[in-house]
Image (cartoon, rainbow, N blue to C red; front, side, top):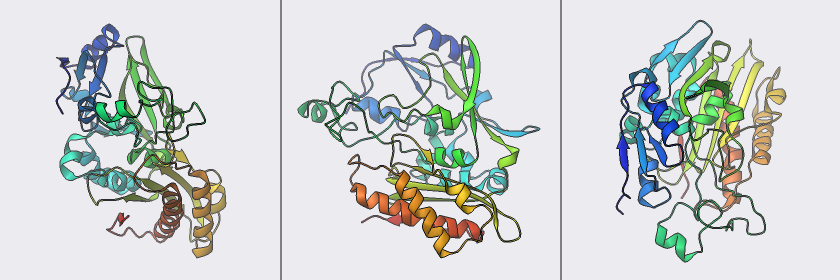
Length: 337
């Protein structure tokens, strides 16, 4: 499938990029790595008049430590995060999650900002124009019906980024810049839970930086991901765990899931259930049950909702046990076939 016609804009500074966003807010799409946007444009999901290529802005590619936090530029590639010795040592759940994204070639192109802003996905949405037209389109693009849940008016397309659940476990914050200035918010508040309007990023804003607080450093981190193939595929269910132990019992813990809701989500009650406890099979099983109850998968992917929910339970249990043992097995993929 060929790309639609567009005009390519290539700013060299953040100020130039913000000026372009202010000038063309409704007719422009931002491309960083392009691993998601370009296929979507080929499918005619987006047909912007302008494409803003921000890859050549050096200020957005830095990973550096500040007094109270670590700053990650939004253009830092997933490969750079995966191979950062500093992040691997202090924020391992993030490097584990980054290492599972697609394939090495795509991780060399894809960025942390792009993964945070990844479009939500659905079997009825991520199709060619001809296919979608034959089905009468959907509520997310050109239609007024959600084929996943026909009785309602909500879009249930699933968010399928790998790094955001890890970032949620690390209490990450993000910075967005526009001509009006800068604003900073918790990543948790960035997502709306609506499949067709899933993020709080205005048309004239650019995601510029991610911040990891020093208070979230040195947690044992584990990420587990379900996908049909061992590379390239998006997660069909994903679980991130960040956990600290104090002479045996858990002193702090966070659990987040992805790919089974329209937004990545923290598992409510998991921290309280783990803190002060010695992790065993029964406790890990109970956390898995909490995660499974948080997951609301529908028929947005090739696997059944029931299977994806069950694998959230299984992966969460395994991840809790692995994090508690400070053990990071090499395998992060379970074959779904």
